[in-house]
Length: 254
Length: 358
Image (tube, rainbow over all chains, first blue to last red; front, side, top):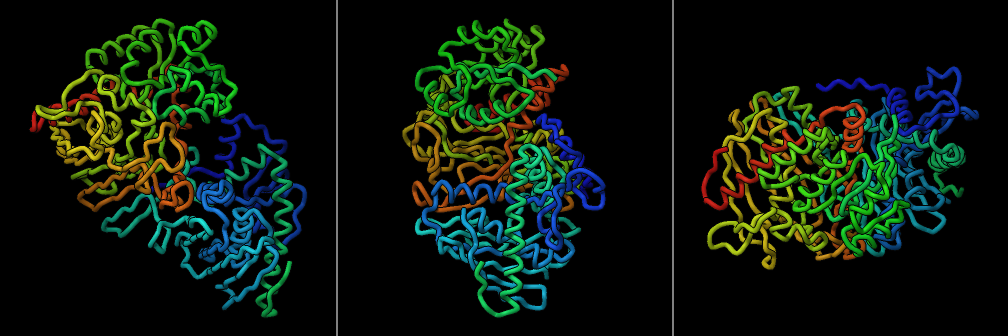
């Protein structure tokens, strides 16, 4: 219906020009194009390999506004003494794997929870669905439900709820099951939904926006790339523990 | 491109604080000074921690910074005419708040001042830089719903008058003290005067102008204020599209002097929702959703914490490009005149108790 015609690399280049950021090296946001320069991809794209100096594992969800706001609610003690996190993330297998979903959700748990995961217990089924109970250093726990059995072409279904001694925060309104959209269009062609969140990157989808925004932050602040590199190494260890736990039927301490 | 040297005037408008981040971050802008209307306003500004000189008179600011090229006119509606005269005299471009004036003679004077001095004047209707609204306009332009029959829209908020008192003073907001209707203790200048966006939006979407309007004000939710706090508007555009608009202050607030967390009593402090009905179907739009939600501090009430994109980024980008490339802003004074005219027609309709043809 509406054509998406902006390329992610062009979009990033546009932002860099607008905000007068000069990257130290050429950059690529797609693996196949990378012959030289920096390769900036979501960290889960590097799960299967050791990353070189020019490969920057991004943690793009950290730039998504809803997670920024949830983190702010926790950091500013709008809700006090968080005890229990309940995360759910279901994506289609043309875009996601169980490993990539766990990678994202575990990072979000540590990012919003401001702590490190110290233990995880996981149960998987049919290589397409799984659940984990993760524990932070502080003792705060989190349930993580993941699945790749959402049909291709379906938008990701996710939910992030934080329950505290004082208050609850969530990215879903009370009494709902699925993420909301900004626009619902009902015509003879059925239902169409639109959720546009970025005026400067209009027409990119959510994953592209997150990638461009996070790559922009890394090019603007190269130290962030170093921090994320370290976090990526840690997350790979966590993801490995997730699968090991399922295989051994036991809780894995990190 | 050479950055535009920009200042802010008054700092008493409800949108004032929304500009700070963009003025600070945008490399196309050089934020050189602000003028605060009084010591309290100055203290509030300084508390933000921006390293920008703050003056207590416009004159002193302009004298100390003769290089100011543009201003954000963040003042009460009644101050606009005087500030326009000053800016036109000095050749300073103006980003004006959403209501230049309700007085159509004054409005035409402002148009002349801008034209004769050659300055750029953009009217702040920030929703044009909201990505959901942009998608809405694209879907309408793509004719997804076919011929549009009706557009219903809300622009409902809490009342800002405790933090921005001029919005509750008829002279400061509407420009004059005019009774809402015979026998009514209230005056023009309340919720309607705060909410031009949906009047503008319907003109953009339909490419048409207002034909006739009917408006009715309900009994005030807040019994102790001088201006209307809720009303409903319906009517037809010249192309036959019908509309129903709700530009009320129908979300209750804590009476804070400075906006802060916990301002809202109703969970969502501001809503612009649009329903479009056309020959091929319908469209439901929430311009400020979805969000995140909590029931934490300060009041342990269920609260919507917004996640919408900063509309002031696109707004200031356009303003800068109009100045440097000598372009006419999308929301210019001539375009906006018909929106103000329609809002005045709403007040006339409330006063007459009947439909007003425009």
